Image 1 (cartoon, rainbow, N blue to C red):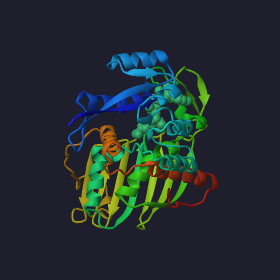
Image 2 (cartoon, rainbow, N blue to C red):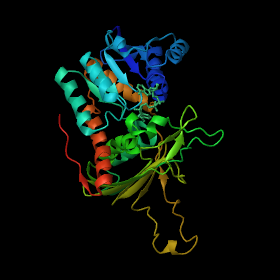
Image 3 (tube, rainbow, N blue to C red):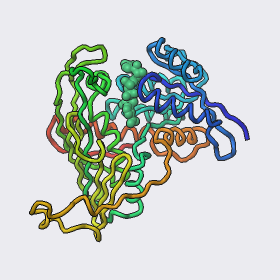
Image 4 (tube, protein in one colour):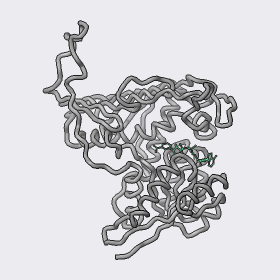
Length: 382
Ligand SMILES: NC(=O)c1ccc[n+]([C@@H]2O[C@H](COP(=O)([O-])OP(=O)(O)OC[C@H]3O[C@@H](n4cnc5c(N)ncnc54)[C@H](O)[C@@H]3O)[C@@H](O)[C@H]2O)c1
């Protein structure tokens, strides 16, 4: 039994994901003495923080135990670190990842992995050709609510799944109101920087629907830019050229249909901003990030006739909450799975082909919106 140190480059360390989810969870693993491996060794991550702003990076590194840092990505890639995590803004990710592949690093990156499915698959193939391990962050099924949804689906609760409904989003301030800054960085609203709601969120809906219900085989989408002008981090007005609203109909392999309503210009009146409903012949479930409620066929109230008069039926009454079970923070789980895969070849699902599938759904949704027709979702293979 011994300590094994593994170097991890975090590119985009000063960003929201970089600081909280990636650096934060890796430092927590290190602070606990490392990740226990099957043979009794402990894997201790050692970080190299990379970003563009030396002042911010130096401050971040200093306040988190004097971590090593550089603003020079090439210099970091020339070092001995084994893993490259890219969690910088989405735009330009394939070029950064290709650089890291050329330097022989194992690749673990944020979603979306690339702007198009072709580029996403190219990254997967480049890694495979060099014998490098590759993975993408797929955190949402580790959230308690969606984790419960997945568990009851696997246990057969739904019977034959007939439909899936996703209702997601909230109002994102445009930055023009005093004291109400835009909650999302401005790059999310510029195509050239990797912006666009479909590219951002289809990445999650793809693996969630594929695994909770059935693989997606077709998509028809409508998109819109509801708020065409916003104010950026420097207080300057800019024109939004990426969509902030997506509607999609989807077909699933098992014959079920689905709807995705995702908007950054809608005010939710529901349990959570991201709600997933699954309906099946034996029961239905509705989950947000934390809670999941079920209604079995036997518990289903008569609603068609009773709902025709005011107060005739309480549609919220006949649902049961699925109890909590202990879970780790989602990004911590993502890192543990990935580190075990790198260190001891543990089974690993979300590789860059899975990442490309997510990009594929966004890519096809954009084409569908442009051409106003159904798009088939072909199988992707290395
Ligand atoms: N898995 C998830 O649930 C989830 C959630 C949010 C964001 N993300 C993804 O994480 C990534 C970062 O998102 P965020 O919300 O942390 O963004 P952010 O704007 O907070 O951070 C982005 C970081 O990238 C840097 N950056 C900005 N433009 C850059 C450029 N052109 N080249 C290199 N670096 C640049 C910024 O300085 C910052 O350090 C995105 O790819 C996003 O899609 C994933």
